[in-house]
Length: 208
Image 1 (cartoon, helix red, strand yellow):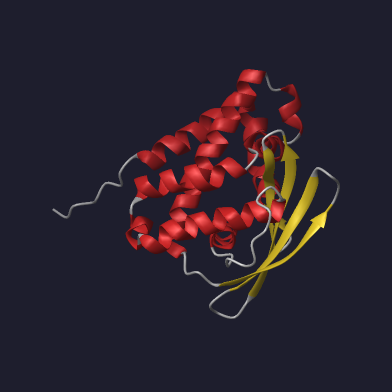
Image 2 (image 1 turned 180 degrees about the vertical axis):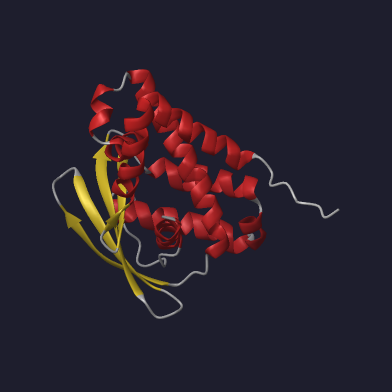
């Protein structure tokens, strides 16, 4: 899971600034986001070691372009239908928080590999897949697709597929297991506890 998320972040942050695209299009949205994020990172390289500022950067420049309600619905699967509106809202908040801290953690692995914009596959007037490939420092080529949907607020990503592995479906099994054991509220508690634990400073073990 951590490798998958690292590749997703690298793919989103290191697409080269190619010819200008319409920022209202799915591919243009990704390219415009990349441009702005890379400008910040390149001008202030120390930001990668500052968790608070990284959180702010990811929260401001990357996450607004994801449809977290749709992502959470896909990750939860069928039990989403029986969840109350309050439970759905809580699940979305905690899932979003989890991805913020996961994305931030992967910045330490950021090496800016070679990334190529491949194509856009228009599935309909309101859905498209933006296809890219990343050549990693070890020479491997990784294919990444951003599943996009046009909403009232513009194009939003609702899934990312790395080498055929979907981000949202990769969470579905673990979420489903938790729901079977402890219900929707149990999943909410589990995500909230993990998010809270991630905020606590790591204590150092002192030798006596």
